[in-house]
Length: 228
Image 1: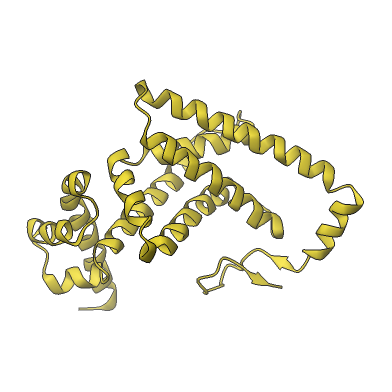
Image 2: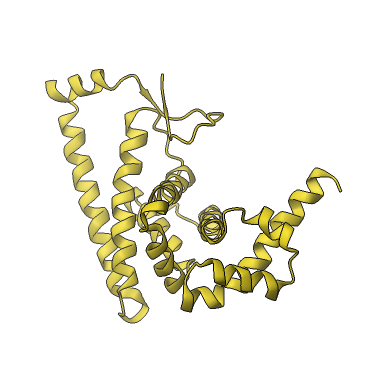
């Protein structure tokens, strides 16, 4: 078997296992027990399953999250946002990302990533989503703003998820209203930041952070940036 064939087999195994697991995840969470049952139900060889999810259920949960990010990229690429303001584009992206997910599966994921041993994994997954959004919206910042934009949206996205999980309004109307208010708050902050950047304090800050660069395309570290 060639390396490409092996990678294809692993990719298919991931998809088949996840599909078999999701109905049980909604009730029992992202657990190794659910994973084992899904492997059996999907008829996947145990050795192949271990290659697919070497760390068990946490890898399966992260794969589900990554699939959602990929689906978001596809949705944004097909959407006509020519008439939208930038704030509306960000709102659309966050709303679309949530609509592509299963609320119960996300709630179970939030519980999993809240565990101390998986907290770092949850933060990386959140960062991946907001980076996906900014990249899809063709963000061109290459300095400290690359980080501040993602950090700010991380706060908006994470708070919106928590609101969404507990939202029982029809069509999640309350969540989308909450999201729009949060985005509006961010835009007001950006306006203030723009005004401050023209002041002596703002210029001093820019000079002090001029060494901070966005990650290069071939940067391989787990850290989301480097010192230029």
